[in-house]
Amino acid sequence: MSAQYTSKPITDIFTPNDTDINRRKCFRKVPMKVLILGLGRTGTACTNPRGNEPTRLRRHLPHDVRLYRKPPDCLLWHDALAAKYLGTGPKFTRADWDALLGDCQAVCDWPAIAFAKELIEAYPEAKVVLTNRDVDSWHASTMKTVYWRVQDWELRWLSKVSWAAGMYYPMLKLFFDGFFEGDFPNRGKAIFQKHYAEVRALVRKENLLEFRVQDGWEPLCEFLGERVPQGGKFPNVNDSGNFVERSRRRNRMQFFNVLVRFLEIVAVAIIGLALLNMLWRM
Image 1 (cartoon, rainbow, N blue to C red):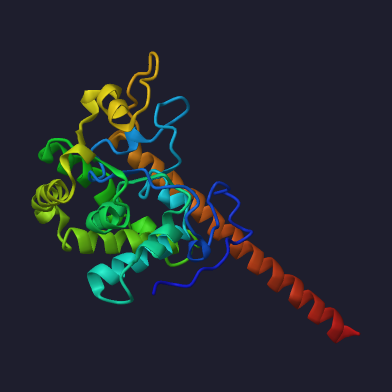
Image 2 (image 1 turned 180 degrees about the vertical axis):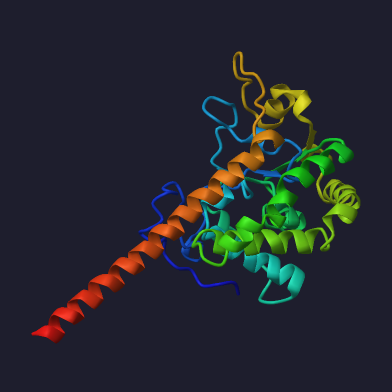
C-alpha cells in the first residue's frame, strides 16, 4: 500500500483548489458512462467539457490537467499501479474503482489508461472512446510535456517536502516506469501501438469510437447521444506550449506552501523558547 492519507496542511494556502478527500472511504454515486482510453496527448483533455460543451459529464482527468489538484487520489492510483506492476497488494476490484472514481461518469488519460482492460471489465456498460493521433507527433509532444514532468528536478525535490507533490510524483513516476517499461524514449511508440491494438480487441465495435480532435464535435456527440453545441468550436486545451509554464507555476505555489509551513515551525519554536525564557526568569 502507498503512503497513508494525511489531511491537507492549513499552511497550503497557495494551492486553495487542491481537494482533500480520502478516497479509500468513498463509493459510487453516479454511473460510469464513458471510458476515454486513448493515451494522454492525443486530445483527451479536449473531450473534457468546459461550460456548454455537450457531454456535461462530471469528469475525472487523471494527469496534469487535474489529478495534481486531487493529491489524495494519487494514493489509490499508486496502490493500483503497485499491484499491477510491482505485485504488491491486491489487484483492484470494481469496489476499489468505485471508491476512486465513484463521483465520475467518465475517466480518461493517464494513469487510467494503464488499466484499460480492468476498467472495461469493471464497467462493461460504459462506452469507450479511443482518442488517437500520429504516433510520431504524439511521442514528440509527450517527451516535451509529461515525460519532462517525470524528469523535473523541482517536482522530485518537492515530493520530499510538499504534501501534494509527495502523493502526486511517486504515482506519476510509477506509472511511467510500469506502463512504459521504464524507457519511454525508446519504448513509447511501440507501447502506444500495442495499447491501441489491445483496446480494439477488447471492445465491441458498436461500443467503440475511434476519434481524432480534427473530427470535431459531430461524431463524438452522436456516439454519446448528445447534441452538437451551437457555434461550438472544438477546444484546443493543454497544448505543449503552456504545459511547462503551468507546471513550473505549480512548483512555485507548492514551494511557497512549504515555505509557509517552515515559517510556522520557526514561529512556534521562537514563541516556545520565549515562554521557556520567561518561566526560567520567574
